[in-house]
Image (cartoon, rainbow, N blue to C red):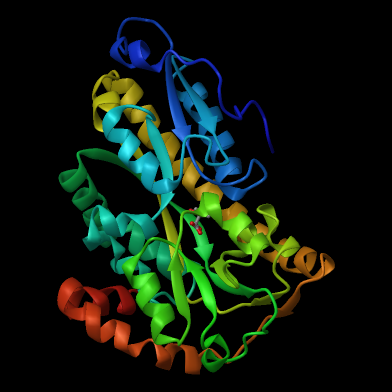
Amino acid sequence: VLLSACSGGGSTSSENAAEGGGSGETVTLKVGHTLADTSHYQEGMVKFQELVTEKTGGSVEIEVFPNGSLGGERDMIEGLGVGSVDMVLTSTGPMSGFVPEVTVVDLPFLFRDEEHAHKVLDGEIGTELGKKVEDTMGVKTLAWWENGFRNVTTASTAIEKPEDLKGIKIRTMESDIHMDSFSAMGAQPTPMAFTELFTALQQGTIDAEENPVPVIMTSRFYEVQDHLTMTRHFYNPSLLLMSQSKFDALTPEQQTAIEEAAKEAGVYERQVVQDMEKQYIEELKGNGMQVIENPDLEPFKAAVQSVYEKYEPQFGKELIDEIRNTQ
Ligand code: PAF
């Protein structure tokens, strides 16, 4: 469903355009994400572009930069403050360096399924976490989107139980919880920006990685990884963030349009993730991956209990229980 998404390097009038929010000129906003132009992020972005055009009568234009062409997620989050990018779609992993409170949602095996996660993120807890991001970083939280449930891939070892991860050098996101979880499962976590990952796997400097199925497929990790185990160990939500100054420079009507479009496109994007997951497991097999679809997850859950012991004092047991008990 790719329309006019820009692959980078296009001209933009965002510096002066956002200032002219009420002046009748077209405002162009640059959005960056790290995934391929065949990914769920990009499909969501194309929908967002269409909705923003429709809802603003064309007075706001969204220019999309996929493939990390504006930098890795951490770089782009920093870029919101200095104006190198106007909006970023980022998973919560790198947020641990900015707003650690928000990463409560990154705890391993916290969510039962997508529906559970959506209930929490679209409800009071998600709104509060979004506000925390706004208060701490001075950026606008537009909506919760989705990267998906993460699964382990490896070059040569099939992972059936946590012991199989022993000593395996696995790339993780730059997230303390992600690293602690893999240490608890016996692996050697190596944090790295996504933009460096394919080459690291290809050169064998790391053995393994973990990502949702749509990422594994659209980033062609099947070319450098032979095994996939559907561990679904972290649910990985994404945040659509916007520079507060760019948001404030828009007219109230444009602001409402952007907020509505972000939420509607997020609902669409989440569906794309689920459709892609179903379809791409088969395609990954077709591309030569050995897939363990229904591993026994109980030993993996038991292995990460120490992560809860470590983080409960930081996030509060009450909040963790409230998330767990959301029906
Ligand atoms: O593995 C990651 O870094 C994330 O899953 C990604 C691909 C950047 C999407 O947010």
